[in-house]
Image (cartoon, rainbow, N blue to C red; front, side):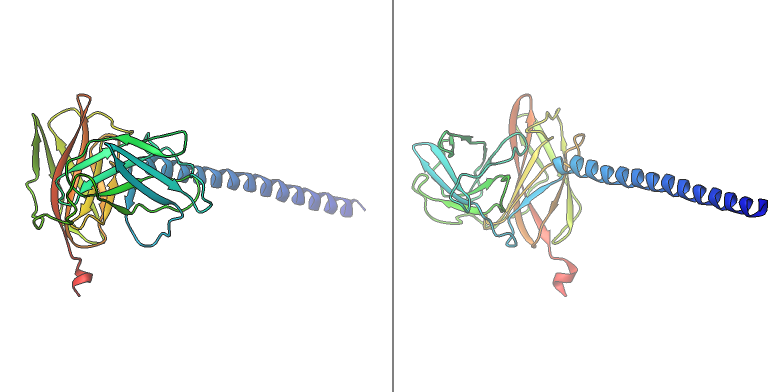
Length: 277
């Protein structure tokens, strides 16, 4: 009898030990997984602020319609979603809207930030020379898909001829505006691969719209658009991805002594070896 009781007690002890061990293991695994997921979220949030790129591509079917008009030195942008309503926009580098204008001769570049009016439209006063422009409305809707697309803006002055510029030729790597010199450095840029654009500035660069600078890039036809921000908050190094080979013009914007300067460059993107084969 005592032998049976001893066996039962021993079996019960083993069962309790197994249950306790499983409980501890499950709790630890849950905590480890939670920590891993939290680390991924924090990494995504930290990198997403400065290392994102807005690009014109064909894969996204936008649900936001955009209309841009220019009259009496006033630019007006109207947005309509698929329900006929004015879409809600997220703050994107301290602004709801970044409005980029590039003249079709590639000589004029303007980066504006229209303010939203009571009727839902966005407006900004801006005087422009007699040129035709391509306009890029850079926004992040709260809901719905959106892809930045070029919008031709004629009637700005009297120049309606398109693409009146000489073929682009790669520029010098150092650009000087007033007493400020900015030098662009990069390895050979290959289509389809990430390119790191390094900028050396002979002055103290101040934060501008939540980043250490902004780089806007267009191709020769001004129908391809890339907008990138620095990879970190410590150095003006930008990661850009070019889908196609060709000549591109870029403007690197830096804030120095309270003023924003746009430094222009022309660079060549080479065909990849896969593209040549």
